[in-house]
Amino acid sequence: MHSVIFDTDIGVDDAFALAYAARTQRLLGITTVFGNVAVGQAVKNARLFCEKMGIRAPVYRGCSRPLAQAPSAPAVLHGKDGLGDAFDNPHRDDAPSAVQFIIDSVRAQPHTITLVAIGPLTNIASAINQAPDIIPLVKEVVIMGGAFGTDGHAGNVTPFAEFNIWKDPHAADQVLASALPVVMLPLDVTHKVLITGDEVRQLNQPVLSAICRPYLAYSRQKEGFDGMALHDTLTLSWLALPAAFGVTTSPVRVVTDGISCGQTLRRLGTLASRHDPFAGLRAQRLCLTVDADAVREHFFAALRQ
Image (cartoon, rainbow, N blue to C red; front, side, top):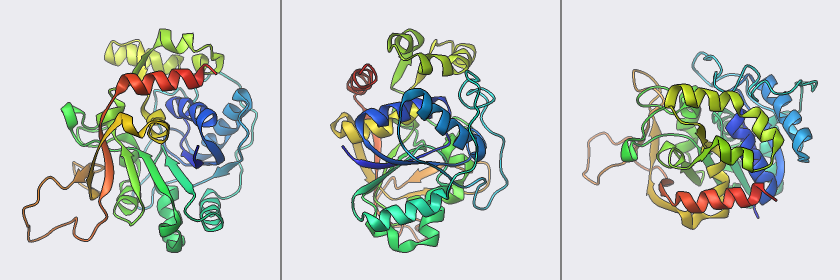
């Protein structure tokens, strides 16, 4: 069991991941960020979902916009409120600072805290910009984000870019090019771990079944598939079952402008080049293959508890 700060722009698949995290890890707090929804809605969603699921963890309010580029519209497949418009939400949207909570927690518990980041990386970039002394004190940063083209799994917002990275490419580039110890769960693996609508219903989790209805409807309309990729939950799968993933190591950079904005790039060869954007950067761990059956079975077992 890991001590986890759970950084999220909480939508439907984020909520599945939070339910999984609450059953498998030690949750220190939930830090919210813009992305699937505005940050205020993310605060409300985190509080509502914790109430509905009996999860006890403090909620913090993080960044409301990208570091450098203009904000973009929230996602649409999660419903208007990000949780499938399934419940009235009376919760308030104010909360203490997420960035300060990350800084204070890592300083207080050096080398013990894992940051699980399943939204834009703006909170984490802001934390290391404000307090670079925490970089060597973080145990691990586990990110759902990016796409490297394995088996044709490229971007889901543009042909190049995955949503979380695309929402704030400057923050992602800062985090991935830093000395933080990062593990990436990109679309290369998350698109390989699917569950059907029937399997969601068989979990006997009424809240999860309720919130995912628009998400499943979107999948049926766009993909012809009554189901969903588990996406964000794979960050927790990495913590529980690292042997289920095939890992390669490489420095990573993010394109921050142009038609490929948001694309994650890794070093593909060893040939020397005159201008090397990876020079001196830490080699991060990238999960590019997965034992989907093992990941699915562990997820089902945890959620049926």
